[in-house]
Image (cartoon, rainbow, N blue to C red; front, side, top):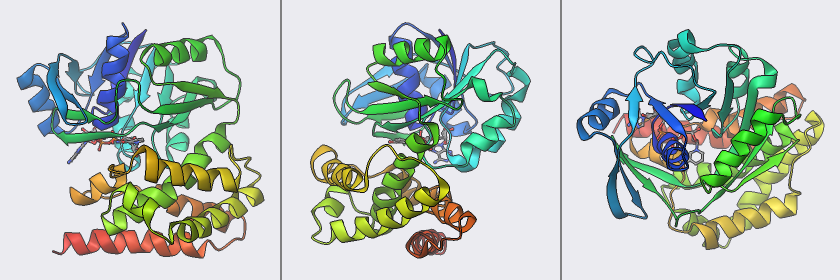
Length: 315
Ligand code: NAD
């Protein structure tokens, strides 16, 4: 299959390189000049696994302006606040036969994709696949080969032939996809998961295991989960896990699966980039307001993360 990977950061490089190794034709498209210059100078991206076996993988990388290909599928891995800018710069190579796929965190991206693509061409999902960009052209795939898993669903909730082709390629790339027919519930379940782990670990600049092993971790998580689940119930969104299952997943993920990992929101904070908190806790609060529910804890946390960003900017 012919892919354009839009955003060649941590996740773009991971998905794109694994899809390329599974036999697909992948072109990366990026706008961050230090990354573009480094990848062109090196002839590819350096890839490690858990800081080991660092090696160069040749890749094709273009800017939106130099790319004139016609991919079957465009995969978006930008940060939420970058997406509108990428879409505008890439618009010249979009056409109505192409499909789009993304596993970006947070919510806000689907409406932006709908401005350029028909609903039956949009597939989105969630990724529990930890990846760190050490710097321009240098990515660390956390975990052993085949580590992590992901969910995907069609916006129309009707998987078609292209959805199954994408699923097969992701499976060959050892991404362990699960195909669901609950679009909003699949995405929101991960937003809620991130609203606990990403936000709390980022605010305190701690690895996930430190949150999981804290004796009040359950209480902190439960308050956020209860608020978010109450809102989703009012909004008519059927989440893919129960409250107790989500609490269990938070516990296992932080304490057992990835205790040493810092979530992607933390990577932004330490590099003095804006975080995606407005699209995670902020989105839950916005959804609450639309359904006459004041998500006090999510609003408070969103403001605290902005305070941490403000503090770093003024240091
Ligand atoms: P990323 O920040 O690594 O890359 C996204 C874009 O930002 C790329 O275009 C990249 O070139 C650019 N970029 C990277 N560092 C930059 C810097 N210092 N200054 C300016 N531009 C820079 O983002 P990502 O981790 O690939 O995340 C993409 C999406 O996937 C996000 O929505 C994220 O929340 C989600 N996600 C990430 C992970 C993870 O472990 N990294 C896991 C699941 C979901």
